[in-house]
Length: 133
Image 1: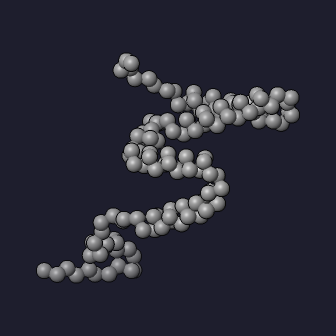
Image 2: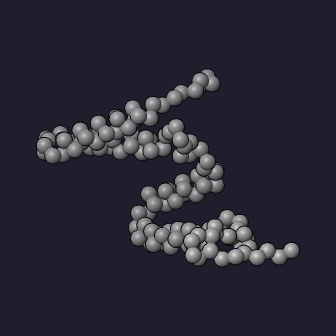
Image 3: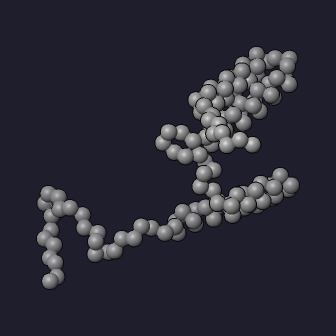
């Protein structure tokens, strides 16, 4: 393989996704006798939409750029388990929701000491702050 860098045009991917999904919507509304084309446009449109979301933009890097191997392995195993046994979803979804909320609430905060939290004085509520020497 060569060491060429292949660039993907993100706006073009988005236009292709919208075109495919729009065509699928037209085929669905017009009650076309071509269910194969409807299914194909829906699938290609969804895959292109997912690719558009994952591609890097000018302000952020690609979605997978900061994924560690452990995270990738965990997500892969979870997806495989869901595909192998879909009925596990009714137990795992509430569990994952609770874990997500707990992780959000218990996440580490920025290092701020209680003595450094001084808000600037404003109007009548201004108080004199005395410093120890």
